[in-house]
Amino acid sequence: MAAAAEDKAPVITEHVTTLISEKGKTIISDGVVAKIAGLAAREVEGVHSLVAHHVGQAVVGLARALSRQTNRDSGILVEVGEREAAVDVRLAADYGVNIPAVAAAVRNNVINRVESMTGLLVKEVNVAVVDLYFPEEHAPEPVRRVE
Image 1 (cartoon, rainbow, N blue to C red):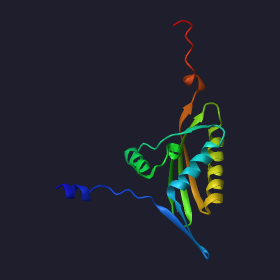
Image 2: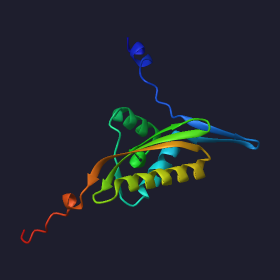
Image 3: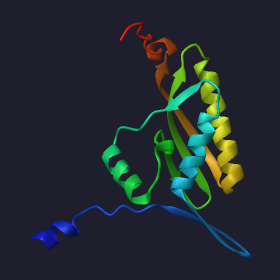
Image 4: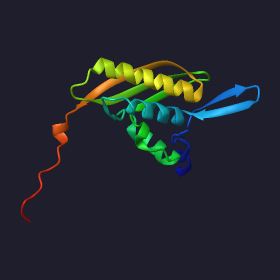
């Protein structure tokens, strides 16, 4: 019985893209593309943070633990083919920014970074602004005057 249960356990594998040239091949992991996209999104002024995709976070957490990934790419989902990539970004924007302008800047920066660093053609970057950051919500607690 125990062996049957082990056979049904999901196998988590990291997808990789292989770019073949006349002088050899280059292998790029989906996790690398996701990290590039995450860093590129955070570079944009008005992006407060990336927000994790809730569907399948337990599986994603397990995959990260096994592959020693960090949470830097937690708001990023990528689909990478042999020559193309698609990226989904979920973020929290700073209150008061022009959200369509921030989304356009994120889209452009992700496309530029991924294409220039990997050679992949980015077909689309979908940006979901799922939260707003209000600085006063996270103001430091007042300092106690007495102990």
